[in-house]
Image 1 (cartoon, helix red, strand yellow):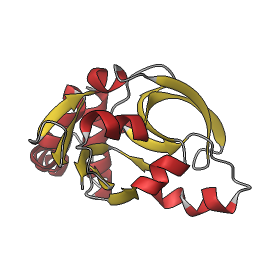
Image 2: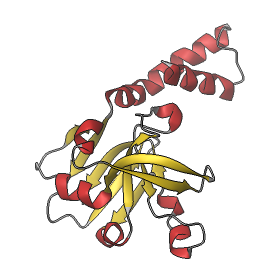
Image 3: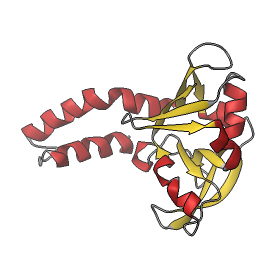
Image 4: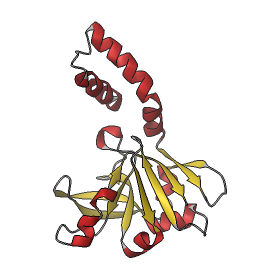
Length: 179
């Protein structure tokens, strides 16, 4: 419930209104209709798989199903928070091997705000890219940029190749398309 309140209060703040005023109430109703599908996806803890999936059809997978591939725990330096964070999830190469068709050469990861990042096969073979399903041992919602995110497990701010990949750190993942 706190995630929904966070979204509403953020929306209301953007329009400079108090949630208890008439204007705030109206903003809350608008936010409710705008974010209904977002909060539904976050609560369900699923990611939509599209394109060349292993099953040959679009479908949803739960974070628990993803973890069953072989969840790993990594302490990763997060350049946005400027500290080491404990993440759990599966490596992108394992995820693609399980859920993608063998012919897949790239994937497109799509966030809730429609931000899209493409990963080529060479990238998930060269870098240890983690599809995060838990933050500090717990599932995490929209207020913590969940339900899933992408991080580079071996990130070092001193390496140019890692700094070049910063735009590919993605959060609030709702869909992964196999291409």
